[in-house]
Length: 243
Ligand code: CTP
Ligand code: MG
Image (tube, rainbow, N blue to C red):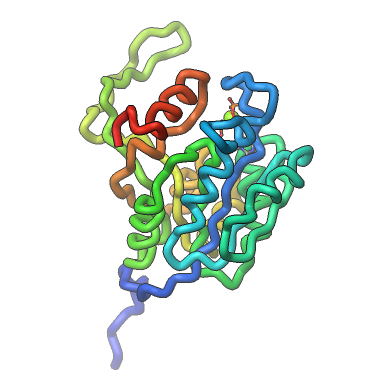
């Protein structure tokens, strides 16, 4: 009698030839930045943030397709910024919440890719090496991979009165960035089951009970949220800041 049981296979190498789509979400308004145009179209030195993001995302290993998710009012403007990308690229209109925009991008990413990387246009300087690190971890068989940096400040959890209820052990915390990489089918399942307004795709995969692995992040991938962040990004680009 055969007494062996079929267990779920452990993550294993999927080979170096993952077919990857990158979804760049750029459909937010940028209310905290407060510019006259949506944040992805705000200039950083000579080009909009989205152009910087596309230049770097376009060098992702295994890349076969790019989807840009833009505000409905800026689809043509976004298309004009995709000229330098060497793989087929399309622009789709986003939604009210970031998760709506990711879902729109995912629908356009195609089911012929193995992996989808979701990237914030606002993380305009995230380097190609970070994309490569995420793809490498996916190729090892992990279904979900996010870059993260150690948290430098002590973090407090507070109640509605501002009274501290907990102090998590800082050494166990990571501030996560994008690009976040997923097995395509896993991300599709996660979004099909998503509560409205989710801000983090990896959290949706966690809800499925699947592991999400954190790889080392990069200070260059910090998000432009406020005018100060834009000034910092400008200094970094000019070589005056940390590399
Ligand atoms: N995003 C999106 N669709 C939305 C909201 C956000 O595609 N409905 C994108 C943004 O364009 C950005 C990324 O998600 O690249 C991260 O979001 P965030 O930094 O919050 O950008 P905004 O929502 O534009 O900014 P704010 O929250 O200050 O309004
Ligand atoms: Mg936002």
